[in-house]
Amino acid sequence: MRALVLTLLLALLGGCAAVPPAGPERDDWQARQQALGAMEAWTLNGRVAVQLNGEGWNAHLRWRQSGEAYRIRIFDPFGRTLAQIEGDATGASLRSAEGWQREAATPEALMDAEFGWHLPLTGMRHWLRGVPATGPVEALQLDDQGRPLRLVQAGWQLDYGAYASAHPLALPTRMDLAQEGVSVRLVVSDWRQGAP
Image (cartoon, rainbow, N blue to C red):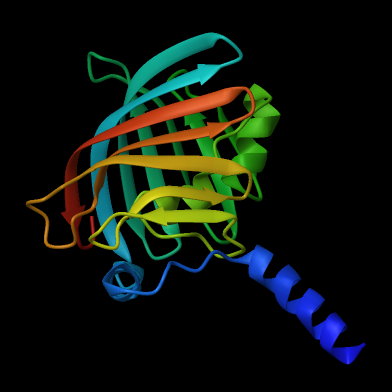
Protein backbone atom coordinates (compact mmCIF):
# COMPACT_ATOMS: atom_id res chain seq x y z
CA MET A 1 0.00 0.00 0.00
CA ARG A 2 2.82 2.41 0.91
CA ALA A 3 4.52 1.67 -2.41
CA LEU A 4 1.30 2.51 -4.28
CA VAL A 5 0.89 5.82 -2.38
CA LEU A 6 4.55 6.70 -3.04
CA THR A 7 4.15 5.91 -6.74
CA LEU A 8 1.04 8.12 -6.95
CA LEU A 9 2.79 10.98 -5.13
CA LEU A 10 5.77 10.77 -7.47
CA ALA A 11 3.46 10.76 -10.48
CA LEU A 12 1.63 13.84 -9.19
CA LEU A 13 4.87 15.66 -8.45
CA GLY A 14 6.20 14.70 -11.85
CA GLY A 15 3.19 16.39 -13.43
CA CYS A 16 3.99 19.67 -11.67
CA ALA A 17 7.31 20.38 -13.34
CA ALA A 18 8.74 19.29 -16.67
CA VAL A 19 12.29 18.01 -16.55
CA PRO A 20 14.35 18.07 -19.75
CA PRO A 21 15.54 14.69 -21.01
CA ALA A 22 18.95 13.45 -19.94
CA GLY A 23 21.86 14.25 -22.21
CA PRO A 24 23.82 17.26 -23.42
CA GLU A 25 20.62 19.31 -23.96
CA ARG A 26 19.83 19.06 -20.25
CA ASP A 27 23.33 20.18 -19.25
CA ASP A 28 23.08 23.13 -21.68
CA TRP A 29 19.60 23.95 -20.33
CA GLN A 30 20.79 24.02 -16.73
CA ALA A 31 23.80 26.20 -17.63
CA ARG A 32 21.52 28.59 -19.59
CA GLN A 33 19.08 28.87 -16.67
CA GLN A 34 21.91 29.81 -14.30
CA ALA A 35 23.39 32.40 -16.69
CA LEU A 36 20.04 33.93 -17.62
CA GLY A 37 18.82 33.87 -14.03
CA ALA A 38 21.78 36.09 -13.12
CA MET A 39 20.79 38.57 -15.86
CA GLU A 40 18.86 41.01 -13.64
CA ALA A 41 19.07 44.17 -15.75
CA TRP A 42 18.28 44.35 -19.46
CA THR A 43 16.47 46.28 -22.18
CA LEU A 44 14.78 44.96 -25.28
CA ASN A 45 13.31 46.77 -28.26
CA GLY A 46 10.93 45.07 -30.62
CA ARG A 47 7.51 44.78 -32.20
CA VAL A 48 4.44 43.13 -30.75
CA ALA A 49 1.32 41.90 -32.55
CA VAL A 50 -1.73 40.92 -30.49
CA GLN A 51 -4.81 39.02 -31.67
CA LEU A 52 -7.69 39.12 -29.21
CA ASN A 53 -11.00 37.44 -30.05
CA GLY A 54 -10.55 38.03 -33.78
CA GLU A 55 -9.30 41.62 -33.51
CA GLY A 56 -5.66 42.63 -33.71
CA TRP A 57 -3.22 45.46 -33.23
CA ASN A 58 0.51 46.04 -33.70
CA ALA A 59 2.91 48.28 -31.81
CA HIS A 60 6.55 48.86 -31.01
CA LEU A 61 7.78 47.99 -27.56
CA ARG A 62 10.66 48.95 -25.25
CA TRP A 63 10.97 46.89 -22.07
CA ARG A 64 13.50 47.87 -19.39
CA GLN A 65 14.01 45.55 -16.45
CA SER A 66 16.21 46.07 -13.39
CA GLY A 67 15.65 43.44 -10.72
CA GLU A 68 11.95 43.61 -9.82
CA ALA A 69 11.50 47.08 -11.36
CA TYR A 70 10.28 47.41 -14.95
CA ARG A 71 9.18 50.04 -17.44
CA ILE A 72 7.32 48.97 -20.58
CA ARG A 73 6.67 51.63 -23.21
CA ILE A 74 4.37 50.96 -26.15
CA PHE A 75 4.80 53.12 -29.27
CA ASP A 76 2.85 53.59 -32.47
CA PRO A 77 4.65 53.18 -35.85
CA PHE A 78 5.61 56.90 -35.75
CA GLY A 79 7.38 56.59 -32.39
CA ARG A 80 4.69 58.27 -30.29
CA THR A 81 4.17 56.73 -26.86
CA LEU A 82 0.74 55.13 -26.58
CA ALA A 83 1.07 53.84 -23.03
CA GLN A 84 3.60 53.11 -20.32
CA ILE A 85 3.38 50.42 -17.66
CA GLU A 86 5.85 50.52 -14.83
CA GLY A 87 6.22 49.06 -11.40
CA ASP A 88 7.97 46.60 -9.15
CA ALA A 89 7.03 43.95 -6.57
CA THR A 90 4.93 46.50 -4.64
CA GLY A 91 2.58 47.60 -7.45
CA ALA A 92 2.09 48.74 -11.02
CA SER A 93 0.92 51.88 -12.79
CA LEU A 94 -0.36 52.54 -16.30
CA ARG A 95 -0.04 55.98 -17.90
CA SER A 96 -1.76 56.74 -21.20
CA ALA A 97 -0.74 59.14 -23.96
CA GLU A 98 -3.72 61.29 -22.92
CA GLY A 99 -2.21 61.73 -19.47
CA TRP A 100 -4.48 59.65 -17.22
CA GLN A 101 -2.88 57.18 -14.82
CA ARG A 102 -4.16 54.06 -13.06
CA GLU A 103 -2.59 51.89 -10.37
CA ALA A 104 -3.01 48.29 -9.20
CA ALA A 105 -1.18 45.62 -7.23
CA THR A 106 0.06 43.80 -10.37
CA PRO A 107 0.37 44.66 -14.06
CA GLU A 108 -2.11 41.88 -14.85
CA ALA A 109 -4.73 43.35 -12.47
CA LEU A 110 -4.12 46.75 -14.03
CA MET A 111 -4.69 45.45 -17.57
CA ASP A 112 -7.76 43.46 -16.49
CA ALA A 113 -9.30 46.55 -14.90
CA GLU A 114 -8.60 48.81 -17.88
CA PHE A 115 -8.99 46.47 -20.85
CA GLY A 116 -10.82 43.37 -19.62
CA TRP A 117 -7.88 41.10 -20.52
CA HIS A 118 -4.17 40.94 -19.77
CA LEU A 119 -0.81 39.74 -20.92
CA PRO A 120 1.16 37.71 -18.36
CA LEU A 121 3.72 40.49 -17.81
CA THR A 122 5.02 39.08 -14.52
CA GLY A 123 5.90 35.76 -16.16
CA MET A 124 7.01 37.38 -19.39
CA ARG A 125 10.06 38.99 -17.78
CA HIS A 126 11.40 35.44 -17.44
CA TRP A 127 9.93 33.98 -20.63
CA LEU A 128 11.42 36.75 -22.77
CA ARG A 129 14.89 35.53 -21.74
CA GLY A 130 13.95 31.92 -22.47
CA VAL A 131 13.59 30.65 -18.89
CA PRO A 132 10.50 29.59 -16.92
CA ALA A 133 8.90 31.88 -14.38
CA THR A 134 8.54 30.73 -10.77
CA GLY A 135 5.99 27.93 -10.51
CA PRO A 136 5.15 24.64 -12.18
CA VAL A 137 6.11 24.04 -15.81
CA GLU A 138 3.48 22.04 -17.70
CA ALA A 139 5.63 21.20 -20.74
CA LEU A 140 9.12 21.93 -22.00
CA GLN A 141 10.75 21.05 -25.31
CA LEU A 142 14.42 21.92 -25.94
CA ASP A 143 16.50 22.19 -29.08
CA ASP A 144 19.88 20.45 -29.39
CA GLN A 145 21.61 23.43 -27.72
CA GLY A 146 19.43 23.34 -24.60
CA ARG A 147 17.28 26.31 -25.64
CA PRO A 148 13.50 26.11 -25.32
CA LEU A 149 11.48 25.49 -28.45
CA ARG A 150 8.22 25.26 -26.52
CA LEU A 151 7.36 26.13 -22.92
CA VAL A 152 3.91 25.75 -21.39
CA GLN A 153 3.39 27.51 -18.07
CA ALA A 154 0.55 29.26 -16.20
CA GLY A 155 -1.89 28.34 -18.98
CA TRP A 156 0.21 29.99 -21.72
CA GLN A 157 1.98 28.19 -24.55
CA LEU A 158 5.21 29.84 -25.70
CA ASP A 159 6.87 28.86 -28.95
CA TYR A 160 10.37 30.20 -29.53
CA GLY A 161 11.08 30.76 -33.23
CA ALA A 162 14.55 32.33 -33.29
CA TYR A 163 17.52 33.24 -31.11
CA ALA A 164 20.17 35.99 -31.39
CA SER A 165 23.24 34.05 -32.43
CA ALA A 166 25.45 37.14 -32.02
CA HIS A 167 24.49 37.60 -28.34
CA PRO A 168 26.68 35.62 -25.89
CA LEU A 169 23.57 34.18 -24.19
CA ALA A 170 21.68 33.59 -27.48
CA LEU A 171 18.57 35.39 -26.23
CA PRO A 172 15.23 34.82 -27.95
CA THR A 173 14.38 37.14 -30.83
CA ARG A 174 10.99 35.72 -31.78
CA MET A 175 8.33 34.14 -29.62
CA ASP A 176 4.64 33.38 -29.89
CA LEU A 177 2.40 33.23 -26.82
CA ALA A 178 -1.07 31.76 -26.92
CA GLN A 179 -3.92 31.25 -24.52
CA GLU A 180 -7.59 30.78 -25.26
CA GLY A 181 -8.75 33.83 -27.22
CA VAL A 182 -5.37 35.63 -27.12
CA SER A 183 -2.26 35.23 -29.25
CA VAL A 184 0.82 37.42 -29.17
CA ARG A 185 3.86 37.52 -31.44
CA LEU A 186 6.94 39.36 -30.21
CA VAL A 187 9.89 40.05 -32.48
CA VAL A 188 12.94 41.51 -30.71
CA SER A 189 15.17 43.78 -32.78
CA ASP A 190 17.66 44.63 -30.02
CA TRP A 191 18.77 43.16 -26.67
CA ARG A 192 20.96 45.13 -24.26
CA GLN A 193 22.32 43.73 -21.05
CA GLY A 194 22.96 45.83 -17.95
CA ALA A 195 21.23 48.68 -16.16
CA PRO A 196 19.14 50.95 -18.41
